[in-house]
Length: 214
Image (tube, rainbow, N blue to C red; front, side, top):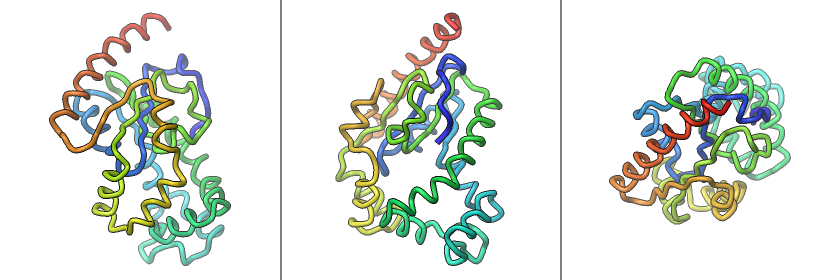
């Protein structure tokens, strides 16, 4: 996604990741409510592929007009089925989107104001380009059956569609092995808030120390 840069070249930052349906957005929003500056690369990707988004012309040229909706946005459902069925096609889409996401993420980080930075990166573990770019990696974890249930309910996908997306992502074990911090997000919202409160307090302390040692 974005180009590698030493964490020491940035304000104190956390890379937040997790599998599809793990609750990354919920967790990121709760950190944002506590004063963190949140930069969500998935939201950036959505903006790039919205009507008049700067990726639309390249997507139309590369994949054809059938992948563009009548409103001018990328047909996300059609593209999702297309790229998850063929790794080569996924790489073609990534070649369009990742450089644009990189530049937009850099711009957003430069303008961000908050107690510390949180980059929400769904494919942080899969992308070698994020290694060492944040001070810590925070993984939002949940049982795989909960992931599947959430995505089926939220997106109207079939179980096989969700499982295909999960198969293309890092495994749960791989994400946990890469984590400095872990939030368990199964079903208990009270427990989720308590975990975030604890990490927020810790990150505030680390951010102060990080700033002094730069």
